[in-house]
Length: 121
Length: 107
Image 1 (cartoon, rainbow over the protein chains, first blue to last red):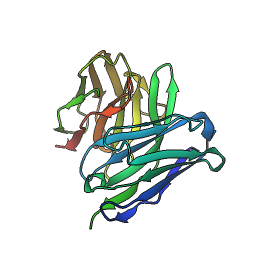
Image 2: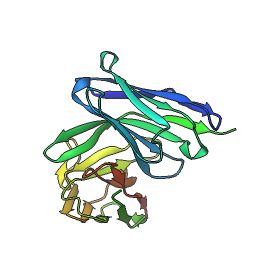
Image 3: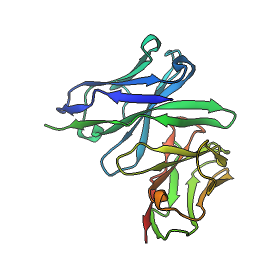
C-alpha cells in the first residue's frame, strides 16, 4: 500500500536550520511529483513546495522562497525539505503528499502523517 | 495567487442531515478543484477531484459540483464519522491554494 513517512521535525531556534525527510513506499516513486504542505497550529493548510519526478523542477511559494530547498533521491525513494533562516511563522506540522496527475488535473492523493517543526527561542 | 474562499467557516448539523459547503475562487479555475477531509490530529484525505469525481473508496454520500469560480461539496445523510474539517484546493495554477476550511460539528 502507498505510504509516505515524514521525519526530521523538532524544536529549533529562530534563524536556525532543519531538514525534513519524506520516505515513500508502495508505488513507483520516480513517476510522481511530491508536494510539501504545512499547517500552523489551529490553522488551515498551506501548500509550500513541490518537486517533479526527476528532481529537476521545483516550485516554492513566496513565503519560503530563498529559505527552503526541496530535493529528492529517487534511489532512496525520498524527498527532502531543507529549511534555513527559520522564523516563528514557520512553526507548523509539515506534510508531504504524492501529487497525482491526470486529465482532471493535479491532486494530493496520499499524505504522510506529518512532522512538527517548532521555531522558538 | 488564486484566492479560495469557503463558506461557512463552521456549521452544526445532526446525523442524517444534508450539508452543503461552498468554495469560491477569485478567478476561473475551470474544474481544477479538489476537496479534502481532515480529522483532528490526522492528515487530510482526498475526497473529490476535478470538482466532481469521487476518489476511490470515498462513500457516495459525498458529491462535488461546479466549475469556473463557484463550487459545492455536498454531504448527504451525514454520518458520525463525517464530523471533520473540509478544505477545497485549486490545482489550476501554482501556488496551489486552499480555502480556509469548514468545520462540521455535531449539533
